[in-house]
Amino acid sequence: MNSIREITTKKLGYLRKILGKSLILNAPLAPKTTFKIGGNAAAYIAVKNADELATAVSAARACDVDYFLLGAGANILIGDHGYPGLLIHNLAQAAHIDGNLLHADSGAMIYPEIIELSVNAGLSGLEHYVGIPSTVGGALWQNLHFLSPPPDRERTMFIAEVVHSAEILSADNKRQIVDCDYFEFGYDYSVLHERDDVVLSATFRLTQAEQTALRKTMQANLEWRGQRHPPLDSEPSAGSIFRKIEGIGAGRLIDECGLKGLRAGGAQISPRHANIIINTGDATAADVCSLIMHIQRVVQRETNYWLEPEISFVGEFAPVRKL
Image 1 (tube, rainbow, N blue to C red):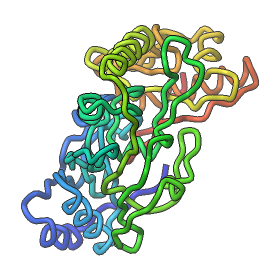
Image 2: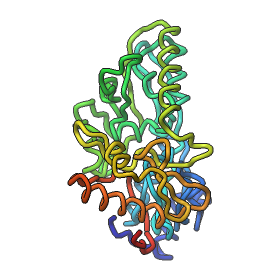
Image 3: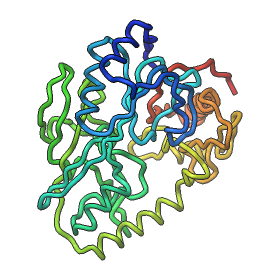
Image 4: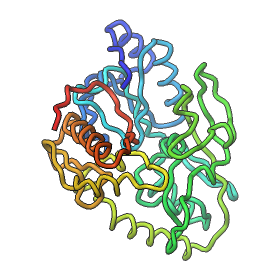
């Protein structure tokens, strides 16, 4: 976890001049994440389109303020002490179709909005990702993937397979169009992990298909996912905690070590999916981190495998107690 500089009063003043009254101080972040965990942001702004997103990022850079882009709020754990920089909430959601191309702002939700838009137009390529909480920008950041198509689920489908191009704001604040190769996609990876570039919008190249077949795939994937993943509305989580080990599921290793159901405060290893930690109602980030560290120690001791977290740790964290 990188150290984040607190925003000085002077820098807040500069941000206020650029961003106006839409800048909110000491904003709660837990409700804006799928984990429902975390402290407040020193400064927060919600952006509604690509231009506002570019302006907010450029303002943070100009004022030398640390910033974090929040999309759907999945796959992250925000520290109990919150985020001392500028939290930019990406709510840019415009989308439209041009032939076989679907253009969408980076804050648009893959499911249901973008998938429904594509399926209603009889376009295939995105229906595999139903039920996954992700924005377009988050999907490109992590190369969104899912085991599909049903019923055989012979391979992992990656969002990279349908990415045509994207508009980015480069680290030097230039807006430019890049193609799919720019992202250097890998498993749970894109070059955005290494560069300070921001996706403003993306274009997906899809293929014509029958709506009936597309909706059949969607329904099968929703059912398959529902049987294996705890529901976010009643059991908040960040999704899978640990990265996949080639040929070996992290969840399988955790399960084999008898850790399913283990609790630390309000956090619990899901009885349904061993690679998911759920918030039972009052979990803290420290509770989650305690479980993560305990899982790593036990799995390494029992199997000689070291599990690497897949989620991002955002903000400032309280001390963690050893289980």
